Length: 367
Image (tube, rainbow, N blue to C red; front, side, top):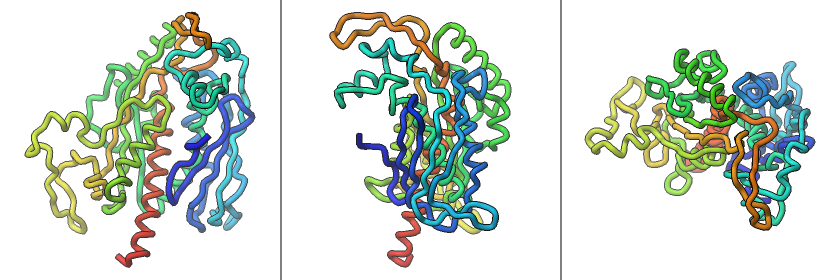
């Protein structure tokens, strides 16, 4: 199976299945000498892990990270050596029997059929690599990337902007971790967060699911990151976000609303801001010509309703015979609250990669 490695200079390879013995990964290309806080990695995992509130799947996993390689003890902490950083997350609460009834059929809107079409077989339990549980490994790697970015003054934050038709009455902006995590739904607007939670509870009790949108903002990214043409910064960010399970749309800056404007309305005028050039508005979303311009990078990621519903649906067997399928097991009624750390992790991986690429370009050309 190809496609399990992401990144160019800062790379992560992940492994493991949802209901196997463990998940894990290898981070390759992390610079030597970076102080790594395992507690910080664990905090990121705790934001993503199942069973953290009544709004998420009741599956209970400790998701305790074990760092296996690539670090050395220094000044009572861990410091990267430049070697591949290997880690593992053991599955404590796998229940493959929850999926035994699906051995000869395909769940609607899941990857069951497509995986079997590609490989001639599939991991029935939890969808194997197609499960959102695989993203736990990304969150570990993303936390390492985040700690590297912090040394460069770069911050990445995301929050739930909308659940179904309930949205924040505020434009996208950076919100602190404390603001975002003040409510389990991870919306920094208290009244909206309350109504979102009520909607998620409502559909969960009905055996249904809902989707919505996450806003991600990266600030402190200097001008100059990204490559022209095929490796544009927003192209790599798009690949990162589209690689997340359940992603259905992506907007940069003004997004679709920008398509309703005229050029005279949409253009971001350049202004002088003391020690740097900036823009008066940020409809470009912090990226122009595929290269960061020093303004906040602003993305909006849309996620579909979780495909596993508890009400009966129609499908077919391998032989093509009609069959009724009903969801079983432990699943989220809405992926949005747990998607926040996933989106942040993927953005951190992209930005860390482009930080190293920019560093290499300057070393090469002496700019």
